[in-house]
Structures are given as structure tokens and as C-alpha cells.
Image (tube, rainbow, N blue to C red; front, side, top):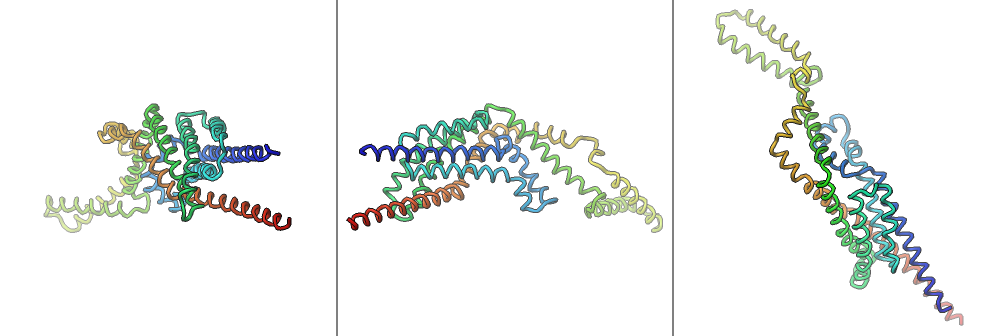
Length: 341
């Protein structure tokens, strides 16, 4: 009978360990389903201007946002699942079994082929898991107001800082050691800019509904007629009128057959060559690993305050409320037993 409480405690710690393991593995599964990778984030960064400049021409703002960021929204759900596990650890202490959390975290690497970014993410998550437990104990002793919410919110917020530092380092190492990311960024930027230039050039072709082309033709005819009047002041108005009609017909005929290929060069190739030879772009490529890593870190910090910490606080509030209700019920039963005796 003396060992019964110890066995109950060990069994409880095992259940806590299994619950957190399921949350962590589930978080990695959601991340895998989101298909968000460093490469996809690089392409998104390069196409950002094109998406918001040209996307709204064919779709609504809501459709552009959903088509562009749907994967990121799913990835945020994966990180939110990690935060639920961290919040649980801040409230329910798994004891020595916390060190075995490395097992379910590493097993998730099968989904990501144990990439460099995954290894740094797992190290960050594991250390955050160890760090959040003493943080939860500290806040449980120190906090007075909004205690149930702030234990999870504050503890997870500080633990995520550790995790995000490892994500920053992992992304930096990945970008520096793999030139394909910067190459994809360069190629996608060239393609994106060429698409924007192509759309702008097409505005001058009257094949569509553009009023700009008609205005351009009229302005060109006026300029030409002014030069003709200056050079040939002795012509009659009827002759001027015939010349003007002829000029306009020639310009319209040329404009109707206008295509970007008629310019005599390939837009994408030209833009790409200009970009490669641009000192500004060369500087951006040098700073590209740091720029992308900082962008990822700042984005995660933004969502930490907006989403992750509040969700962790709500979860800790629910867990502590349930524990408190169970404790009150046990005390009530004990009191009734004493009274009955």
C-alpha cells in the first residue's frame, strides 16, 4: 500500500509524456502537410510584388490572400500545436520523462528527410520543452493576477524565444550552405519583374480595352502633324486632314499587330541579364541569407504575440481550471467522508 501513490504518480507522468508526444508529432505532421519550406518561402519573397500588383487584376483580395498564404496558415496551425504541448508542460510536469521527448521529436524527421532546418527546429523545440517546465513553476509561484492564463502565456512566450533562435540559425546555415536558394530567388525575381513589365507593355497595345493606347496614338499624330505643318506651311487644310487620317491609320495598323515579341528581345532574358549585372541585386544576394532568416524570425515573433502566446494562455487556463475543479471535488469527498465517520 505504501508504493501506491508512487505508482500512480509514475503512471500520470507517463500519460502526460504520451499526450505531449502526440501533440509534438501532430504539429510536425501539420507542418509537413502545409508544404511550407525554405524554398517556398524564398519564392514567395521573390514574387511578393507580382502577387499583390497583378493578383488583384483577376481575383479578389481575399482570394489572393488565401491562394498566397494558405500554406502559411496551415504551418501556423502546426506551430500552435507545439505551443499547446509547451503549455501543457508548463502546467503538468512530466518529471524525468521530459528527457525522452527527444524520441517523438526526432521520429518526426522521417517526414522531412532529417534536413538541416529540421534538425535545428527539433533542437529548439526540445530545449524549449525543457526550459518551459521551470518557467511554469516560477510563474505559478510569482503571479497573482490572471494566474491561470499567464502561466501558459508567459512561460511559452519565453520558451519560444529559444526555439526561434534555433530556427533563425538553422535557416541561416541552410541559406549559406545551399546556393540553390539564392539562385531560385534570382530566377524568380527576374520572372516576376518580367511579368510586371509584360503587363505594363501590353497596356500600350490597343488589342484590349486600354484607353492609354488610343491617347498615345492621338498624341503621336498631333506631334507629327505639328512637325508637318511647320515644315510644309503651304498645304491646304484638306491635305493636312488627309495626311492626319493616313498617319492615324498607319499607327493603328502597327499597334493592332503589336506583341511583346515584336520588340525583338525576350523580356525575361533581358530582365534576368539586367538583374544579374545590377550592383543592387548583387548586394541583395550577398545579404540574402541574413535577410531571409531575419524575415522568418520577425514573422514568427509577430505571430508569437498575436497567436501563439494567447492560445498557450487559454490552454493553461483550461488545464488549471480542470485540475482545480478535480481538486475541489476530491476535498469535498474527503470532507463528506470525515463527517460521515
